[in-house]
Every structure is written in structure tokens, then in C-alpha cells.
Image (tube, rainbow over all chains, first blue to last red; front, side):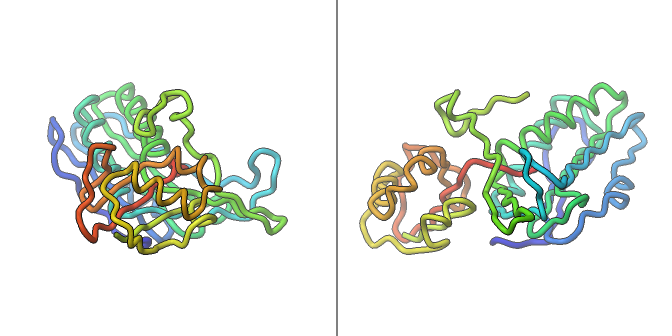
Length: 170
Length: 77
């Protein structure tokens, strides 16, 4: 349950079109996924790639290691995509998150949204990645150049909301 | 009952372990976990809990031999 390479369509959502959620233990194929983001009804396709940077909070990062509860994460990401498709009338919604070791400059998460006009695609894309970061059972461990490591940047919305299931989005 | 923990919780608990005590709900499970390692109190207070069907809340009654997932705050992306 800690490792997977699945990527599957998500049923449901209003307005038709496609939604696919996945958690994978291999490099993310941005070009291949972008190709899946095209749709005859969509005049706009937005791709967000969350990538590993070489420093965080003043510390030199060597690489990140992601862990997930894959079944729950894929289920939750799928629900997030279905919600977003219904809210913004998306033609396509795709999200894929990587687990395992991810090197500097590699993609850790990708979100692709397609809609008739760009406003909806941008807004939905931002919403989807924010919810994935706050809600999906996926965790990053930062490995630093000095050999230390730290599970980090956890969602701490509960400190404000008083409920571990309620989140505050940017 | 089998407990699975993830991420930073593995600094305090084995990734998977059995609880032999009778545990009926999340509050009782939390008490058991704190009895094992109270150093995890701050992190546990921020955790969600899940079973095979998905996330559960404090009203959920555990079944016999259930697998319970203790879910720390997310840090994906």
C-alpha cells in the first residue's frame, strides 16, 4: 500500500469530460500528460508542475522523498478533481503525484486543467493543487546536503480551524 | 487491531503494529497511542484517522481486527 504506479480515470462529475488521478513511483511524463489534456471543447489548457527546488528555508536540499497512503490519496485526489470539474465546468482534469525519491528539478506533482476559457482553467488548477497539498495523505521528507532529514511543511490549518479536516486555502 | 502510521509518526512508532487492548473509538485509540509514546502527543493531536473505507470521525466504532491508519498532516506537493 506504500508504493504504486497507477493512474486511472475518475468516474462522476458534471459536464462530461475526463478526470484522471494517480500516484506513481516513477518520473512523471509531463509531455505525455499534457497530450491527454487536449479536448475539442477546451480553448485553454493549464499545466502546473510542482518541482523540487535546491533550497528550503535557507537549507540546501539534496532531494525529497515522498510517501503516501496510495489508495486513500488516489481516492481523495479523484474526489477533488470531480468537485473541480463540476464547479468550473472543466473539459479535462488530471492530477498525478509522485512518491519515492525525487531529485532536484524533477516534477513531484502535476495538475492539468482544460476548459473553454482560461479563467476557469487557471482557477480550477490552483484550487486542485491547494487541496492536494492540504488534504491528500501524501508526505514529503526533505533530505539535506548535510546528511540530515526532516518531515516537513505539514499542513497546520487545524491550529486555526480546530479541526484536522478543515483547511484554509490561499 | 492493526495500526499503520506514516511520515513523522514513524519517529515515534513502528510503521505497523498490533494493539491487543480493546479499542472502541478514536478517543480510546488516542489514549493507547499516548500510552505507548507520549512524545508523539503534539503530532497525534494533528492527525486524522482512516480505515479501509476512508477517513473516520470520533463517532466511528471500530470493528474487531480492523486496520486503522493514523494520518499525519499532509505535506504533498
